[in-house]
Image (cartoon, rainbow, N blue to C red; front, side):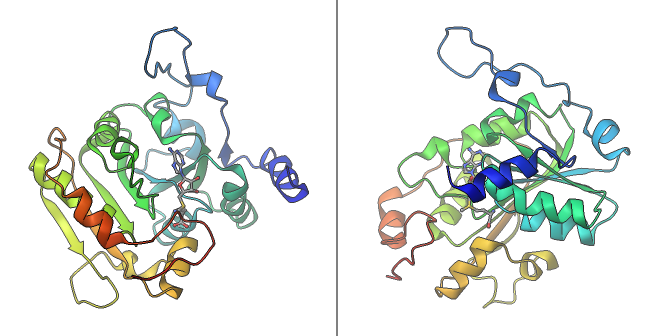
Length: 262
Ligand SMILES: C[S@@+](CC[C@H](N)C(=O)[O-])C[C@H]1O[C@@H](n2cnc3c(N)ncnc32)[C@H](O)[C@@H]1O
């Protein structure tokens, strides 16, 4: 491991806003197939134990450096924000900023999105942001807006709670719209090119740009947005994978290497 990563991991240990449970804290080894989770002590306790208040909690999943988490926390002091990611070196950036700037309503959780039910109680979360999630072209069940993940979110998202998806991936945008349609959930707002149309969107959608968003914009890719309330049981989408994969073209994989516009 590089020296810089080790330095960040060491500094991460000093940030009180960053929670880094080990997998063993939440994963039960039953010998049975599938994920078996046990509750973490923070489940149902974020307001009382982390923020010291009962303001609504908003999650950013796959937050990377935590750009949305931090920017939303700075704008909305009446809510609490938690950025979730598995990569400690990325979380370091957001956790350091929050620590140095003494932002009381932002925190970070280093864990897999698959484990979130172990950390949040029913109704504990008011909103979820998915920001530039990996589109997972080959693995539908790994997409963070798939019926599988929406079922997980429903176990801790309050009724009427919103899921926001902001992505440069037209494939993931269209897939998510198909999931929303199949489930019969209403679309609250939607745009296939947020900076080139006048669709009414929450102002923060156009005001805040993440690290990955800036990269994709520099490469000339349109940015999409869709928001919905997953109140109804998610259903398998009627989605033309082949067509939208082709439309996605040679995009790859959120590496820092430039990808070719088709
Ligand atoms: C393309 S990056 C986007 C980061 C950030 N949202 C942005 O826009 O700059 C996707 C992030 O999702 C995280 N991620 C992907 N799958 C995850 C999972 N199952 N659990 C937790 N984090 C995940 C990765 O570690 C990565 O930081």
